[in-house]
Length: 474
Ligand SMILES: NC(=O)C1=CN([C@@H]2O[C@H](COP(=O)(O)OP(=O)(O)OC[C@H]3O[C@@H](n4cnc5c(N)ncnc54)[C@H](OP(=O)(O)O)[C@@H]3O)[C@@H](O)[C@H]2O)[C@@H](O)CC1
Ligand SMILES: Nc1ncnc2c1ncn2[C@@H]1O[C@H](COP(=O)(O)OP(=O)(O)OP(=O)(O)O)[C@@H](O)[C@H]1O
Image 1 (tube, rainbow, N blue to C red):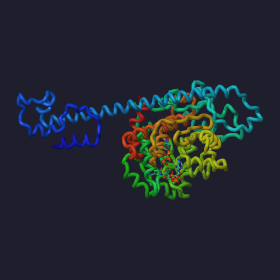
Image 2: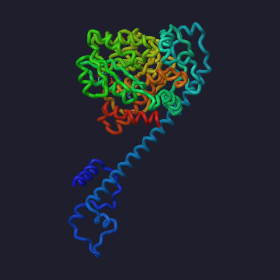
Image 3: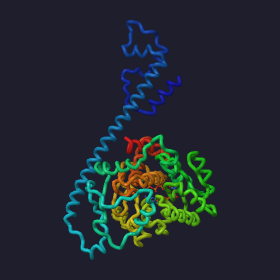
């Protein structure tokens, strides 16, 4: 009987066009109440077949068919998505062709004279030939963290060489994906039995206060799900028990508002591979001051630092805290971006050209990598630009940015600890940022397919495993 109820439930919940044409609609009452069939009133073959089945068998059959129908539904859905992907890829390659034509036109324009160079404004017109090798020297070997940092930490000069402006641009068309994804894949450490706990990443999140406990949790658990071995949250005393209660998998330190917060956290820095500063940090002066000091001390150790949410509030107030640090990555949403831009440029943001503004801000910040999140994610270090427009969904629940920054903490560690040839000379921050945005959007897409309007960040986190496999391991 339970089985019957379940079958009825399945059919009423999912009005699918099932292959049940030969299935008598009131089969259960028929088998119970009908007299045995005589030769004169013999039902048709299929009916007899079902009539002779026990109720349980019948229901099993019923369930089998419903599952088949469900499989068919998902198969069709998958086909639909594939053809949508194909259409988008074709669109992208048309765009790419147009850009290549533009590139040729611009190649014909002479480079400016030195006098012009001194005042040249950065151009956002991308060169779209991904086959052109990068001219930037590779960097990123962890063992040389401090010397590399020193040599890359100068803010941009007053003028920009035309060639320096944008060496390459990728968009997420087929060709571009083919170029960037292998670089992300190259940085992903293989899962082998030769490693010990911690080697694939020990990530620290600075954030979590009385108001916001969800954000640091989302960031920390995302880091773990992407592949970090250990995920630490450094938060205020009252936020800690709450965050601990969400998950036993996180290591939670209730120190961020203690009188010796900086020293307490600094003890952990030698063991951390990357730091995410800001999710749920809040904007209290004392917390921002502590966060600032922790950033300063992490920089001295060459630790990759991702700054998000309230961490960006701090940067807007005191840009020098991260300016020029080549292992720093900023992940603003549009609001945070506007705040930062206006703080740096002392003029209102011209919001008609996001790419150009992102590039200008990155340059003003000393070629820091910037991820401007939005309908299309724009990733730039002022010289190179990647865009990620992987289809997500129209669902904009809070916390998606935390998933992104937590994942980026891991990708950044992997990218910076990979040998330079893994990223083929590209800035490891760009490769990491691309990996994290691509993954976040795919999680959003997958979660939305299952939960539509009800999609929440927790649903997206549940998709990390399969999204990661699909994008980087298949
Ligand atoms: N569960 C939790 O614990 C979560 C906690 N979180 C934590 O909250 C803290 C504050 O972060 P925040 O983003 O709300 O602050 P802030 O930058 O001042 O934005 C405020 C206003 O800006 C606007 N706005 C936002 N985006 C925009 C856009 N793309 N384009 C245009 N406008 C945009 C929008 O204004 P409105 O439209 O409402 O007028 C919005 O209300 C931070 O610690 C963060 O980590 C979150 O992570 C979520 C999950
Ligand atoms: N209009 C959009 N269309 C598709 N994806 C978007 C859109 N806006 C943002 N995203 C994606 O959502 C993710 C988070 O960006 P969002 O702008 O929501 O960050 P946030 O406001 O900092 O998040 P949080 O709520 O965690 O503070 C990014 O991966 C971004 O690509």
